[in-house]
Length: 206
Ligand SMILES: [Cu+2]
Image (cartoon, rainbow, N blue to C red; front, side, top):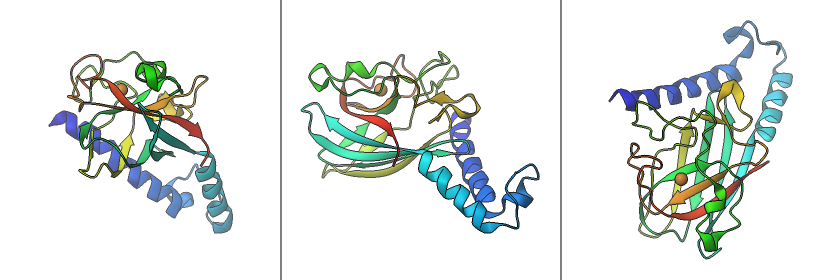
């Protein structure tokens, strides 16, 4: 259970940090350069931050057809990923951040999206003591009607590489890739996730 705790603890910290920063930047962080007595400025700054720190995703399947959308939003300690999928095969599926921002090759099985986003060369697997890599994410489970709405969090990645986290919007970008099988979070290199069945480039902007 230690591995599970190590995954979820940062999620809670991220949520608390976000609340503290937006509720009262002046008192919660004495070093903050936003004056506590100017709520309008603080609000505007947060709004601007939200605009520039979100990316969008449009998924296609192996036929090149649309199968949903997503957003990737920067948080103080990682990224929040929202997915809204349809026309997907039901069941548990692995999803990862892959290292190249292209989904141009559905006929080839989306191999052009490269391996996992993994600038530090870590092993794959949320349950692996030598992992996880920067692109690892929890599995998703598509409903029987082929739809899925879900919110994920990763403390391993950042849109711009904040605090040394794996950088999503680097020179060659990155993509969210969904696999045929679920990820066992341990087997190298991709947890037995199998072929890639959907892909969406992570594009800056909302
Ligand atoms: Cu993958």
